[in-house]
Image (tube, rainbow, N blue to C red):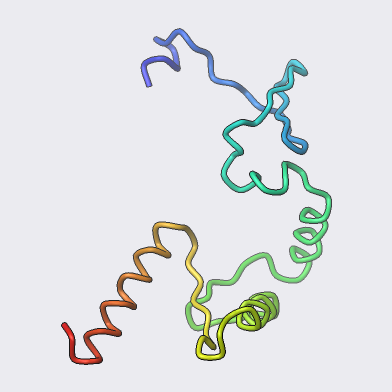
Amino acid sequence: MKDYGEEGTLPMLAIRRGEGVWLEDFDGNRYLDAISSWWVNLFGHANPTINAAIRDQLDLLEHVILAGCTHEPVVQLSERLIALTPASLRRCFFADNGSAAVEVALKMSFHYWKNRGHP
C-alpha cells in the first residue's frame, strides 16, 4: 500500500459514477472497469433493470436478516432455484458472501457425515 496515499507515488482513482463497463472520475475521464468491481461483472454498473428492482424493493423492505425471518423475494428466489435442481434438493440456504457460503457448506457436510455415523 506504499504506492498509494500521502507517501506513495500513485494517486487513488476517485470514481464519481459507473455505467455499463465504464467508470468515470470527477474530471470526466473514463476507465474500462477491468476489475469488474465484483458485483457488476455480469450486468454492468447502473443497470436500469436491476436499479428499478432495487428501488421497488426499497419502498417495501430494504433488508431483513434470514435468521428466523423470511420475506417474499427470498421465497420466490428459493422456489425458482428449487425448480432447477433435482427433486431430492428441496431447501435453500443463503449466506451473505462467498467465504461464508464455503464455511457453511463445509459445516453442513461435516454434520451430514457425522449424523450418518462417519465422523
